Length: 113
Length: 114
View 1 (cartoon, rainbow over the protein chains, first blue to last red):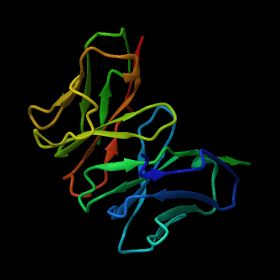
View 2 (view 1 turned 180 degrees about the vertical axis):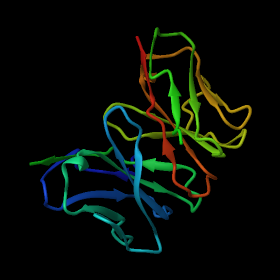
View 3 (view 1 turned 90 degrees about the vertical axis):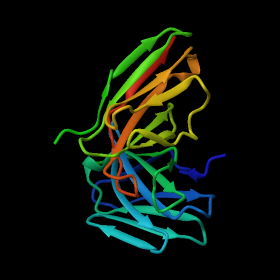
């Protein structure tokens, strides 16, 4: 039973446009959400997070939106750049300690020239 | 400073053998995590250490899997009687305190069981 779902395995976006990556979760006890980015042969790197008390968090070109009623979050990247091509993992934690993180299956983002 | 390192980067073994995977966390990080990532999936939580003790080992799939962190720094994930289904990338992460602080991942060890 997947508690964190990323239903799009891949996404292709033109350079300069907006990339929108989506994530759904089923466990209403999750209260902390994260996005990780992964390049081949490297470990995931933290990108941005959001607490359940917020509905938006912005960091430069990256914005995460949280819709608790729909159990849905999204990551917006604008403008998209070639270096953004990577696999993006959505993740969630069931308590504020974030000690145990549940990851989605990832979305491979490709930025085309 | 140095990030999380994992050795070996690749390990090929035969079914039934015993393997050890090592993780060197970032110096000073008290929390250490092990994850397993199968092809096409996201990382799957295995175990979390706070200092020397396993604070949460609920993700270990069965008793063939065991992990230690005897001095609160380096950790070793041990897999006995390996099975082909154990083939995956094993990721280690550390964080300064484990109280919601960011987890920093190593590059992983790719384990292949023939």
